[in-house]
Amino acid sequence: MDRPVLNNKTMTNGRPLQYDPDKALHAAMQLFWSKGYEATSMQDLLTAMGLSKSSLYQGFGGKKELFVRCLERYRTHIYESFRQLLETSDSGLTFIETILLNSAAEARKPDHLRRGCLLMNTATEFAQKDRLVAEHVTIGFKGLRKALKVAVQRGQQDGSITSNQDAGILANYLACTLGGIKTVVKGGGDEKSVKEIVGVILKTLA
Amino acid sequence: MDRPVLNNKTMTNGRPLQYDPDKALHAAMQLFWSKGYEATSMQDLLTAMGLSKSSLYQGFGGKKELFVRCLERYRTHIYESFRQLLETSDSGLTFIETILLNSAAEARKPDHLRRGCLLMNTATEFAQKDRLVAEHVTIGFKGLRKALKVAVQRGQQDGSITSNQDAGILANYLACTLGGIKTVVKGGGDEKSVKEIVGVILKTLA
DNA sequence: TGATTACTGGACCGTTCGGTCCGGAACTGT
DNA sequence: ACAGTTCCGGACCGAACGGTCCAGTAATCA
Image 1 (cartoon, rainbow over the protein chains, first blue to last red):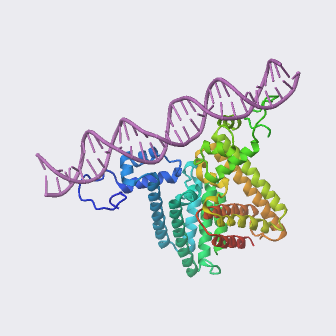
Image 2 (cartoon, rainbow over the protein chains, first blue to last red):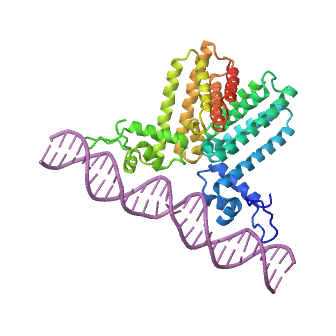
Image 3 (cartoon, rainbow over the protein chains, first blue to last red):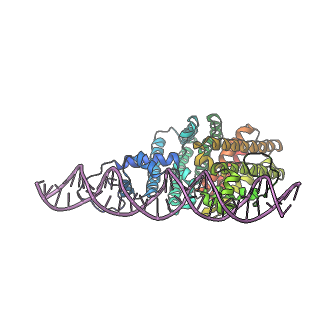
C-alpha cells in the first residue's frame, strides 16, 4: 500500500506523500479503538494522524471510509499476531490460555486504557446501523472464529483439548467467552476474578 | 417518584406535570438502549419522550443525568425480572438456561433490533470516560453477578448444578458468558451457533 | 529551468450538537 | 375571582460537527 488513495489509478510523478500512510492509519486505528467511532472527532483524528484536513479527505475519503480501513487493518493485525502466537505455542491449549490471560491482564490497567477489542467494540457500538461496517465486523468475527478453530483442532490433536466436542463449536464458544471477558474488564472487573473465570473456561476445554 | 425534579423540596400547588415521568423515562431508556449514548441526540429524546426541551431539562436535568436515571431504571428492571423468573423456575439450572436462551433468541431479530444489554453496551461504549457512569455500570454488574450467584446456589442445592466449583466464581463466569453472547449476537451470529454455545456453557455447569 | 503533478493549510460551508432563557398559558388552593 | 405556582413552546446561544474548496507551493521528471 504505497498510496492511500481510494481509486487505484497509476500515478507517475508529482509531489510524493509527505506522511506515512501506514503510520497515519495506525494512529487513526488507535484512536478509534480507544474512543469508539462516534466519540472520535475529525479534529482528534487530524491531530493524532498529524496531517491536514484536506490530506485526510484526499487520502482516506472521509470518516466512515477511514474507519473501515482501520477495521481492516485491525483484522489483519490480530490474525497475524494469532498466527505468530500459535506458531510459538507449546500446545493448542496454551495458545488459548495465553489469549485469555492477555485479555484478563487488561484489568490491571487504569480505566481509560481498557480498550477491549476494536472489533467487538464496533459490534456493540453501531454494527447494526451501517451495513458496510456490519459486514466488516462479520468478516472479522468469522476470521477470529476460524483462527480459534485451528487452535482447537491443534489442541485436539496434541491432546491438550478434549475431542468430545466439535472443534467449530468450541471455537465459537471461545470467541464468545473472549468477548465476555472484554466486556467484564470494561465493566470494571478486577484481574483476580477475571482469572478465575479464565480458569473455569480452560477447565471446560480439558 | 411523583416528580422528576432533581431537588427534593416539597411542592404544594401549581400546575401538575403534563406527562408521565415514568413513561418518559421508559421511552428514553429504550432509545439509549437501542442507539447508545453518543448516537442519541436530544432531539431524538424529545420526540420519543414526547415533551418539550424545557420540560426535559427542568425534569431530568440534562442528557447525562437522564442517562444515569435510565441506567438505574434498567438495573432495577432486570433485577425484578430476574427475581420473578427465578421464582417461577423449576431449578437453578433452568433459570440460567432460560436467560441464556433468551439472549440467544435475539439473534432471530433483524440487525437493528439486536440491542443487547444496556449495561454492557454502556460498559463498552464509554464507561471508561465518565466516573459517574462507570460507577453505575459497576453497581449494575455487581447486582447481576449477585443475582446469578443466588441462582447458582439454588442450583447447587437442588442438584441441577455441580457443587465442585464455588458459586461466586461460577456466577462471574456466567455473567461473562452472558456478555459474550450479547456481543456475538450483535456481531451477527446466527441463532443456531449461539444455541450451540449455550449448550457448551450449560454442560460446564453440570 | 520549465512543465507537470498533487500535497497542504486554511477559509468557508450548512447542519446539528447540548444547553439556556423567557413570556404566556394552565392548573392549584383559597 | 384571585393569587400563587409551575409547566411548556419556541426563540436563541456558542460551539463543534463532518465536509468542501481553492490558492499556494513543494517535489518530480524531462
